[in-house]
Length: 364
Image 1 (cartoon, rainbow, N blue to C red):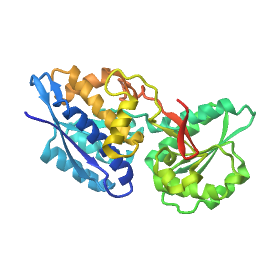
Image 2 (cartoon, rainbow, N blue to C red; image 1 turned 45 degrees about the vertical axis):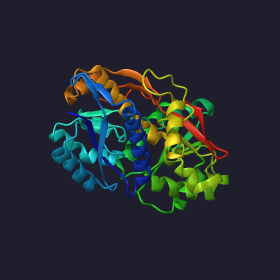
Image 3 (cartoon, one colour; image 1 turned 45 degrees about the horizontal axis):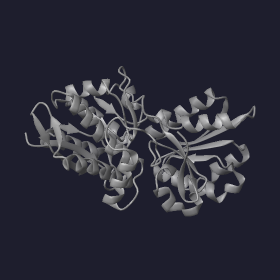
């Protein structure tokens, strides 16, 4: 064995192409770093093995992602398999990976369905979707001291990921004494004027948008038109990535989001680069700043690297057992799994607000 072969589907076209491209950049940067040091030392072979990437475009499509996954796992047969970007695609391939008894190193599928449906072959490195808005709700629960705090959630009811974020936010809002109003819509909605008009009448103290990226962008567009009639406390998931600023320019200012990682993170890692080291390496390589998508993709490489370092072999069951016991911090944050469910319980998200064209972290 001369190389450590890592295979994965990746969205380089279709609706997730922006997220997929940045994720691939993160994975490739990790590979570059590892291989600049001759690879990863594998005790099983008594030497370092360079990392080789094998990937195909899944076109942001469930059926294509299943096709690509089957090809990878039955024809290419990589040593390790990374999941795709997005919750929907991760769930789409889960039955295949379970049937073929393969471990999925999951950096891009946040949905709680993975653990709810018992896919214990997933090593989940990111905060689950039901927790996405916990930080913002906590922040405003403390700030808003009025007796009747109103929370409005605008969500795509036909998206599994969005529904899980909504359900988690609703439950957490009620727990923090908000009166919760929800406004469901079918993903793909172009004009949100009707919902915005209802929000103007309701006068909520906090508004959370929960949709796929195009939904969030269209919702934000309608919000911007009536912004002077709404609260300033408005969050959409899409505001966590730089593309949001590219679309709206100065109108992005004021929008909130939660993020898996930001460049001003002050975490002291137990393993791997610091945040400034990762950030500078990414900028030097790609001539642009990394977002959390690149960070979480790079991070899964670090988790794999740490597991291999502690293992006698690169056999998947051995690495998975080590991952279940792992309790470390990388520049991305803490990694710790619930040993019963496989849910990521160590990593926490931060709250950001766009201010003067920059994402500013306002809460860890």
